[in-house]
Image (tube, rainbow, N blue to C red; front, side, top):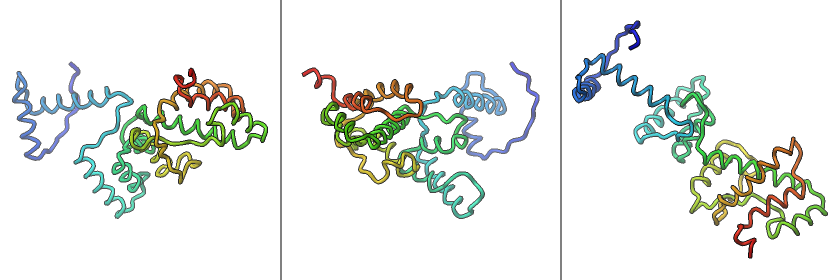
Length: 241
């Protein structure tokens, strides 16, 4: 056991002391209050440091209420702070707590880790930015080529969004990134509801896009690459018929 070499005093309210006493009374060796507090602190630190990086940032109802109150205080006091109370409240109310971690990673933990859905949405939006920009810079001949060879998806390809009814998490993340965080401004003001499931389609497209992006080196996608990408929107089962 590591030697104890620091001593400090701590004042606790009666409710907290009663909770500690109740906890230590259930431990086989019934530790003293001091030892009980040390064990509780160690357990809490272990839980924090072993939490997976992709664990979602979750607020309990009480924590949400406390955060709301603190945001109101911040707005009233107007201190020199990097935290934006309006942004934090919007993220909590919209169920997008991950955005707080993205914007202010040091505010909530030591790592700017995100959920898989957030990464998927960010990659998808980046891919569609590249698709739309490349198409806009094509000449008439290349546009005709894309329209002809990319089935029904090659005519003025634009990001369709996500199904707001069945892909609510992806839809919410995309909407928050664009409307609240000001990212991917190309899609600002658009109706992001595709009205049909899109996640699996985007995953097929992303598998191709990741390969193409390694060869991009700062250049735009070519007409042939756009055709390859857009053809992934056709379900494999449909293309075999």
